[in-house]
Length: 112
Image (cartoon, rainbow, N blue to C red):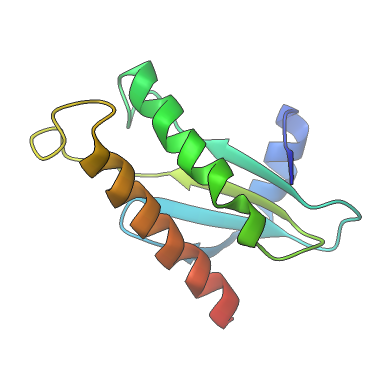
């Protein structure tokens, strides 16, 4: 799946509205398109360390192959992961928590 890189494309998908939410993420979807694309919005406001932002983005892109074809998707981080629970920015616990929550988010999309 290709990545969304242009701000105008992000804005277009995000203006289409939220189709699924989880405690930390929101999923935006825009249909129909010829090529499926994925975008990740991980603001510095919610993930202070660049290492954490990159870890979350990698998890999003890794799970993108299971998404709806012929649609643009944007996954947006909307809440901070508790730094008391996840002390290390790249801990396995954080990766697993992010991956599990993203799988639940994508499962909600498939139910609709």
